Image (cartoon, rainbow, N blue to C red; front, side, top):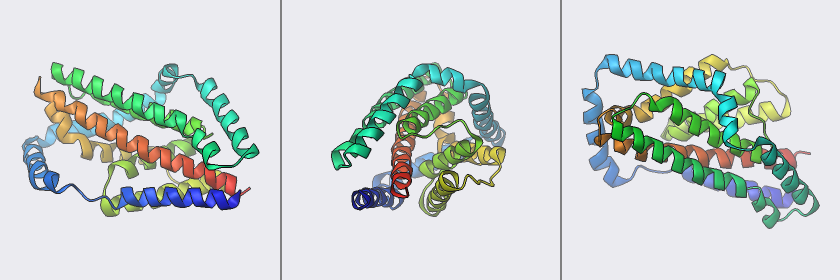
Length: 264
């Protein structure tokens, strides 16, 4: 069993490295990046500050009041039961096939939530609404992570797990050296939570840091999204962000699950 689990963990490590070593597309770097920088330079500092705060407030509202509404969009008990069934199947017959069954629900959730993010981004873009989209986008991001975490047997309700989720989001949306640092921190947090329960980070500080990282990635698209019709491009950014976070979260929660099985 341990031999197979180690092989699976090695595969995950390779996929992680592929994400961490991904280079910016040459076409994007040469054409779209200068365009993005040009637009961003035109955004007033006061508006940038307002948008940055809006991301932080969005996280606050969704975490404090939105979880119960997010949970109405999926069947938490059903996902927990399905995890228990899949876990029992793996314990009885540890194989590539049995381990893959654990991935079915997370993969479906990612597809559905990417579509939701695209539709709501496009809809608000047509109306010329940028800032009102932020709590909705954060809700879709957290919905994606929540469904994935439950599928691999992890509950997202504790403060420690929320801190893990914040760093997971930061690792997914940042790049290069910064992404590498967050990726290391995500693994360290997972080990601390799963094996000794000790996490020293401050929840509100982590929330502020993550909201700022998300703001940095989306500031241009949210500004453009505030322009009617042209703002439909917000749907593309929403799709990309939810896709990145969902893909990364699936790898990390699966890695945690396999590590806990491997260290029994």
